[in-house]
Length: 314
Image (tube, rainbow, N blue to C red):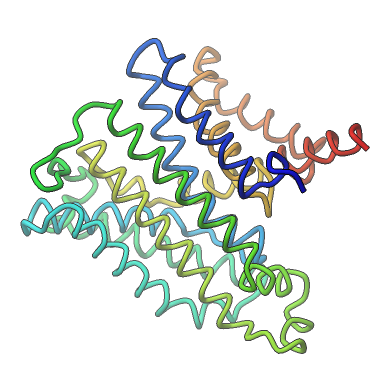
């Protein structure tokens, strides 16, 4: 395998070049804002793809972890004076502990029972964020203090773009190394057959819990960064429709494809912006495009296109 054909080397270099050169094409700061949202969605989707695409465990509540990470970091930094970086890390720790606590009972479920269990968890988190008005501001949301590190404050979309770009690269690198490790092989084994994986000596529950917690922490980190970047958050970030949107990004880009998760996040973040020209038919057009992709590219965009290129090259 050559350097450029390796997803751990050539793919990362290509992604780094895209991140570095993309700002040269942006005519104004609006495009930086869209790129930042793509990066944050991609970080969540990469973690979610580890869970769904590689381990075969569905989750319909990951927006809850995103929203919880945003609110915990915001409350700690804005209301209790905790340094923003420490608040971000504490939020990730708290979400990780919560995910670990609920993972064992939830991850014992399978199929639609698992989907309903994760859906219920996400709904609980969204309800708490809506109802705890004194803590979260309720449906009206809450302002978030600016991020600062040793007196330095990232000011403007350009700085945040580079911060999110570096975090995205680090997430892709982490995910690629994880799936190429014994952990990744164990995840693929239990995706294929949990019974066969258990017979081969793999601790099925342990690895399911591990990937669930990992994906939850990535969602929390993205949520915290989102809170500090936007300066204002609402419970809508944790609702069911956001969870569905994240799953759609993963499926559209391609299950069991790290770069597929990134492409899916990019497409479904950009498309609603482009389809505004259809006014009242915007969501109908978005649904139609997704239906057509799923009908003619059942494995998702990236795996399907990769297979086509491989066939032509062979």
